[in-house]
Image 1 (cartoon, rainbow, N blue to C red):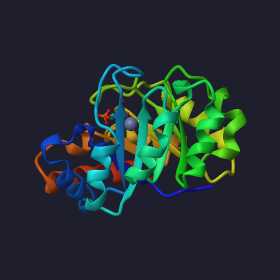
Image 2 (cartoon, rainbow, N blue to C red):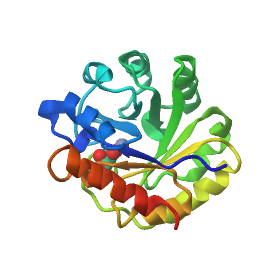
Image 3 (spheres, helix red, strand yellow):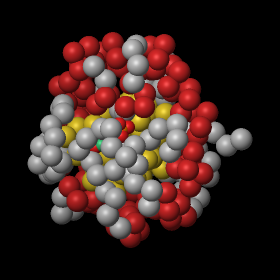
Length: 223
Ligand code: DX5
Ligand code: ZN
């Protein structure tokens, strides 16, 4: 099944002092989704923002809020992120002892259900939940920080996840080190949703973002 190419800027790389305007600008600049990187300083060695900040951003756009929870445990907070206005919620396989329960909870909250794999997490962890999810996120860096380099071995991993997905209507997202130079290989391997932080928010303001988003989209589009 072919799903549309979606460019999902991570606001982790935006100007936190004017987050609402950054969200509005990046969507006006052509972004499809807004990627929200939530970090707890425990599951990953960095702290970003939580549901109250996301709630404050919700009025700035109608675009899909793609929430990537790098927190453990995640279960006690799923409802808060749903109520904050996230459209999709993605949890890490390692975030808790009962992945299937977490996915059921996200579904019951009426949100798109995502699972993410760290670079070293085997694809086999997905085999028994494939019919319970809407999105698979392949981390192409170790989570925690923007601006890292794409791990080349993740291209083959994306290809293998794509094969596992088969005909299911599951979005295949890649996150970390995505630039106009790396996005083509990820797209050719089967990814259709591309998170990019530093490659989108470089330069100054909406005109730069428009150029950056267009360059990514073009490099992801087969000739
Ligand atoms: C990493 C985050 C990514 C990151 C991407 O923990 O999940 O979304 O912000 O940033 P870039 O595109 O700069 O690698
Ligand atoms: Zn992310």
